[in-house]
Image 1 (cartoon, rainbow, N blue to C red):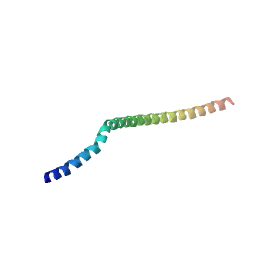
Image 2: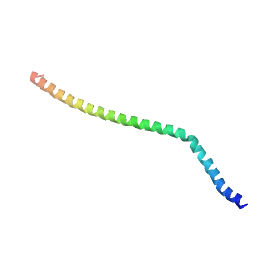
Image 3: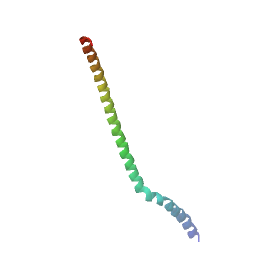
Image 4: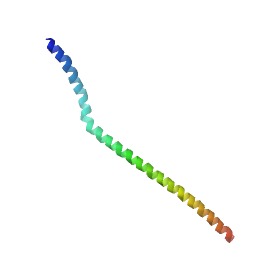
Amino acid sequence: MLKWIVLALVLVPLVVLALAVRPLLARLPQLRRAAVRLRRRADEATALGVAAESLQQRAEGLQVRLETTQRRLAVIRARRGD
């Protein structure tokens, strides 16, 4: 009799634990795919950040060139008397 009580006290929690863990284990492949998608998106966001920074630097360079060109145009117009 004591043997059955001890066995029940050991097996019942194990069965409950297995039943609680089963849905999580069933969703594990979905969770892995979601983690891969999140990692890809993070990589894409990083790449976009790098591209945006590059474009920002290029825009600043073009702004400097535009200002230089405007000053040169003003000098040329001043020489011509326009």
